Image (cartoon, rainbow, N blue to C red; front, side, top):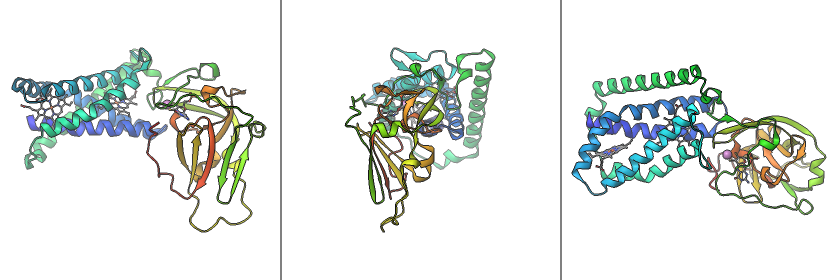
Length: 341
Ligand code: HEM
Ligand code: HEM
Ligand SMILES: Nc1nc2c(c(=O)[nH]1)N[C@H]1C(S)=C(S)[C@@H](COP(=O)(O)O)O[C@H]1N2
Ligand SMILES: [Mo]
């Protein structure tokens, strides 16, 4: 049981970590599907506490080198799980200037080096016994119990009308919809708001054989509109009215066929700050180059002079302060799944 518990924790930690990021990647149904697996693996970790406590108590008594690092690791896992539950129930959505979701993910990220060390320093021999019928039966029981816990939690949140009952399928909470002044200003990680002079600013749009530089005044003349939901991985979402121009409108068809060397595959969008994202070419008609929010020009925090509005994509795709757009032959998956800036 001891070895089985550690092995199960190993699998569950990996599953929780992976499904968390998959949920962050999507803004639609796959996000919820992943979060169900995520929550169930989280509760399964919690359910193993009594068994792991026995192992840990014994281990601590042995005072093996680095035993304290296992305690730091334990604290990080507890912090992450607690913050996750506080977020999902809505019992506590923020501590200081951090959202419960940010703390949840930060603690999980901080735990990575510790878990790597822990499984190497305390590694367990793999034996055929780990795949026995009994092990599988245990795994099934654990999954069923954790699944019921998740289901019961979702029912309880609704019966008690906790704030968690209002969250979107990604787990995000509504904030300031249709009230532009209430839309929070957030960055992915380290970016800061640049100050841009609209008189000299240009949006360079490069296609296979042409570059067109758009001025702010030219872009302001368009009035394509969309109501879209910005769903930030920090744990909030906000639906607003945006206007500007569909990117496809700016990609005038070229007179000559594109030069040899490959098919146009993706749309590369870059901010003045260097923050960038790559989209599939098919999305050109669904990406708005927004100049206005709620009918008013964007303010600097929200991406002045122009930003991307990418309906049905998570907030981190909504590149602000765009200066360059390029159609190129690299596939759209040719980028890190999440920005690092
Ligand atoms: C939720 C995840 C986990 C937590 C919070 C946790 C915590 C701990 C703590 C506090 C100890 C005692 C201190 C020490 O010996 O360093 C320990 C020991 C140990 N852990 Fe973990 N651990 C976790 C997951 C794992 C995993 C995934 C494995 C293996 C794949 C593992 C294998 C072990 C082993 C073999 C020991 C030594 C027990 C002994 O010396 O008798 N643990 N763990
Ligand atoms: C040690 C790793 C992790 C564990 C054990 C864990 C566990 C949990 C738990 C127990 C919940 C509450 C589930 C519920 O009641 O609905 C939760 C929620 C959540 N977690 Fe994690 N998590 C981990 C890492 C991550 C990471 C790395 C991400 C994202 C990159 C993430 C994203 C989320 C999201 C979005 C929710 C909210 C789900 C909702 O409100 O429906 N988690 N997590
Ligand atoms: N250049 C740039 N654009 C960015 C970001 C960033 O850090 N840099 N953050 C993204 C993230 S994570 C979100 S949620 C939205 C937030 O938009 P808002 O500040 O207008 O609410 O902008 C996106 N666009
Ligand atoms: Mo975000």
